[in-house]
Length: 118
Image 1 (cartoon, rainbow, N blue to C red):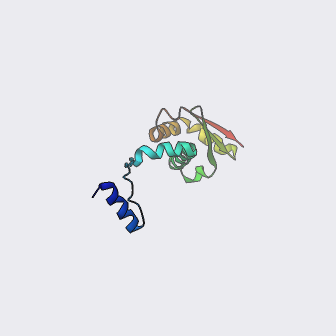
Image 2 (image 1 turned 45 degrees about the horizontal axis):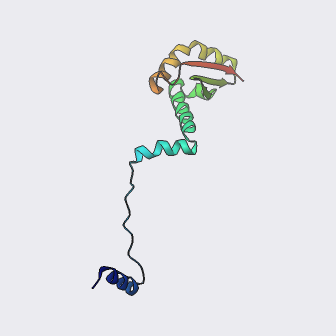
Image 3 (image 1 turned 90 degrees about the vertical axis):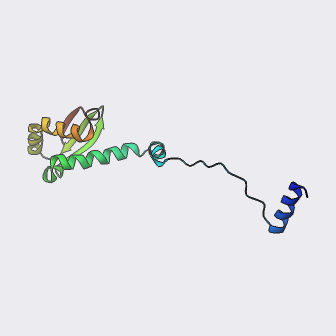
């Protein structure tokens, strides 16, 4: 019996054709996630969340309620606060805060801090 005929008879008898052999295209998740986050526009948001989390750890709970990191632009972290007294306190802690942020996030990511009362 010919192979093609055998295949045809089995397909008719089963009512379905044989599945085609597919090439496996599995990838390592660590290679896929960064590209996926970039394509969905989530990289910036994840970075902002990470900075907010580190800011809370560095500044502490009472001050993080008064001073909020707003954006990271040209490697300068912009922080907005609601009271001039908080601005004064953070200005006195600027070098210490910058050193701790750079330690946790990397020196290449944050070069300076900019405070604004709003």
